[in-house]
Image (tube, rainbow, N blue to C red; front, side, top):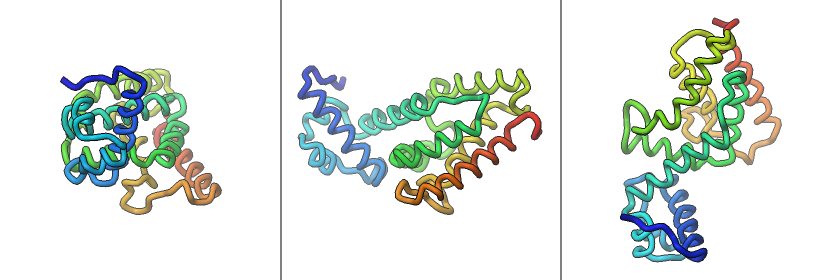
Length: 197
């Protein structure tokens, strides 16, 4: 069983491993990631990495599940304003493109169909409940709450690192991002409000 760091120095090493591995997995995927590059970037050794995480697969799991938690906590759903939620997701993809890349590698290398993670209820149930309640109050159009959630997330990823049309960068002019945000907000609002159904 992997161990947790017991000292502040151990916690720093643990975090360096997570940071280096996040970059490595986001760039190379699970199969392409190399432990040697991770330990070099983290200024540690394989023994320490394996003591903390067990193996490469569990290291990826720790990073990926942490990225899902981050999205959930940093960009919580607001079912009364799904358009704003979509824009906040867009902004998070600009800040942390590695998060969406990790999800893409998971889809490509582990789960080509179905839910992205087995424990999807942990990440989805509160969102689906919020959407269902907003539907009952007449604020969101009728339809399967999961499908509405999936559509809004997909719309928010239109310019993300996984776009097959154009991947946005935080280096682009603010006016470009503002234009996209306005379009995204309008499209999501029209697609999801009860009046549009």
